[in-house]
Image (cartoon, rainbow, N blue to C red):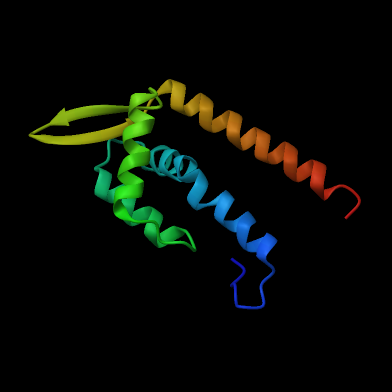
Length: 113
């Protein structure tokens, strides 16, 4: 990861923010795919805070989890009084589509460089 300083151009800082904090859903789904078992929301928060250069507020991550659940991209599982989450088939499809789109953009931007 490239470190940012006061000299880092603003467009680059905006790009990093857009590809991280503004697309937390990708990191939530990636974690759930990697774990391959139901996870607690706070595990997702810990993963994201340890992975991204930005440290989103806990409530922000919980909001993303809630929205993903509402949209059917993740499923809630009640177990022993706890709520766990796992990626749904719809979520896997959305994640795959997003990654393929990012690859397309990288190919487009990387030509002739």
